[in-house]
Image 1 (spheres, rainbow, N blue to C red):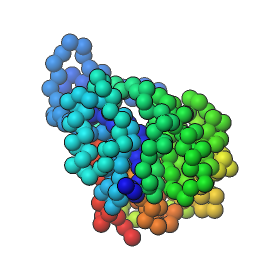
Image 2: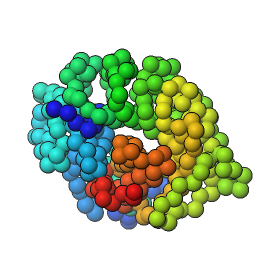
Image 3: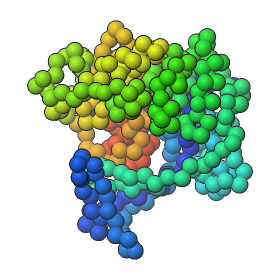
Image 4: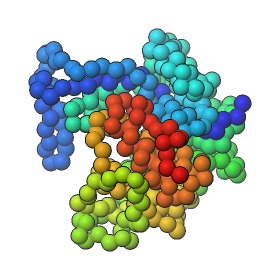
Length: 345
């Protein structure tokens, strides 16, 4: 069987708890660090509770399917009742689950998301451990037009290096959204992986941690177009920004290492995309934030889908921004994902 795209990453059961203001829950901020305080021993009423299928592989697979691609998820799942619940949801979304490794005797990975009334969230999670999710999975993968690799834990390095060794000469689009496991190993660990990557997506802090390079934050008064790139704006209202992040040297480090396209997101400051010749900036879209869960996955899905549909670089970052803005207006990582007919040409 041949697919349009395979998505690699976590598969979880998400339990989303929608918290209410005025129920003994305190939100505070100290030295730019936000925190949530709940009194120990109390029973605290909540607005609602949702059980959803989540995780990077699941969120992205669902998003790609909605944008017109045949998709299979690659990851690990348990064999308990929660795991079967998640598998049923994936199948209902027309996502192939034949390439998920089922770990006997283990429970499904679980995330409990505390979603506050401002759109912020705190995630408590338990990850399933697998001795079988190794480079051995590479030989059993089906044919596909593209790969999307989310945050891989456990044997992540082994899998990434095996992908680089096998697919170096293959014509296949590969998008990568690395995570803490990769940043901890450092930039040089992935010298063989970077030339494999067509699209690298990460936020400004992650790019800093990965490269070891600093970025500059400039006020809008001192920022010049060369600092942030050519603006890309669709048929929507953007939020005003007070600062712009100059991430050019971080992007350049990845481009020189062999990555074809680098996209660096920066929350309320928008996102920037580079390909060595062009540099675009998508200002933040002015929407009401209900829940930020899944925003990063949605951005990646929109951007990569635009590339797969043959869109230019400016349209790619536009699709990513629209996808992310839509998801954060609803609870959960998948409810707000857009359909292909909702995307601009």
